[in-house]
Amino acid sequence: MPKILVTGGCGFIGSNFIRLVLETEPEISIINFDALTYAGNLANLKEYVNHPRYQFIQGDITDSQIVAQTLAATQQSEIVDTIFNFAAESHVDRSILDSRPFVNTNVLGTQTLLDAARKFGIRRFVQVSTDEVYGSLGPTGLFSETTPLSPNSPYSASKASADLLVQSYVHTFGLDAVITRCSNNYGPYQFPEKLIPLFIHNLMRDRQVPVYGDGMQIRDWIHVLDHCRGILAAWEKGHKGEVYNFGGRCEKANIEITRLLLKLLGKPESLIQYVQDRPGHDRRYAIDCSKAERVLGWVPEMNFDQGLQQTIDWYRSNQAWVEAITSGEYRHYYQKQYGQRLGSDSK
Ligand code: NAD
Ligand code: TYD
Image (tube, rainbow, N blue to C red; front, top):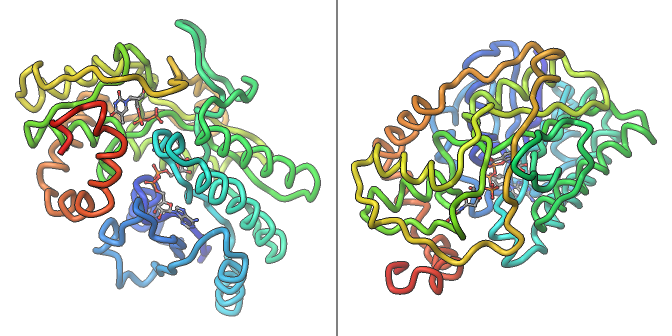
């Protein structure tokens, strides 16, 4: 039975990935290694706490000792076959407020895991990266795997640095690694700081939604489970040292998404508030995922309108989950990020 180490498994994509693997891959057992930052939530996987193929370890990927202890302890029972590195500081706006944790976790954390992978003879390393490493597109064109890296935010710069480190370990040490680069995910369990869950959260409470700049920035949206299936396919069928892009073939301007959410939630346009733009805001992301389709036999399956409706339904049915994570630190962040932009409405 292959054992895998999933870092960042208490976050949005990592928890969806673990759920998918436990539900669809009966041969695989999982260690979820997560530091439980503000974005990590044990409640995301609470129904699996006692699952025979699931184990949680709280730890920081920058801490080489606990990473080594975890891999050494499991080596005695069953060797870890693969490390899936989801753990990251993941929000662009936070990286603008303070980039230090991004360099720490995303760069040094990845380097720590890469060294551990070498030391413990891990068969494969899967680095979960992002399309944001390619920078920003003009009105036409798509990011392919050969698009030069040109990150613009401290977040994307830290992810690009991690990708380069992974590639250097393949080249220098012969480590077997693959890198996945995906576009913007949406779906259940996403922390309400990113566009879609934040806007659902605010609209459900009749609060204004802060649209940055002119709202005409474009993102390519993909359902989180399509992304997770892609990561599994890259693990199973991807070639050593290769990069695989994943996207939903679903380009939408932010204002279009905002209007769709208003419609689906039955809220008035007056809740839209255009606010000061994000500094260095990337204008457009769009992914060419034909390599993943050709080599991995993967295709994005979820229709966006259906996926968005399901996501809204999920947030409606899981208000306690939202309430628990939007007290405390969240309020402090929201005030810092939006206080001046939104005025009195932000409180
Ligand atoms: P998230 O912020 O929801 O979750 C991150 C998880 O990592 C949390 O559980 C957190 O506790 C954990 N973590 C953070 N620092 C850690 C550390 N030092 N040690 C151990 N655990 C730590 O992020 P997400 O949206 O689930 O993203 C997961 C990965 O996917 C990230 O690497 C991100 O760059 C990448 N990605 C995200 C998107 C997206 O749209 N969200 C798109 C493409 C790629
Ligand atoms: P986000 O979800 O932060 O993802 P990313 O920056 O990684 O693409 O933002 C998606 C888009 O929505 C991006 O163009 C910024 C915009 N946005 C807003 O207009 N208002 C907001 O409050 C947030 C969080 C994002």
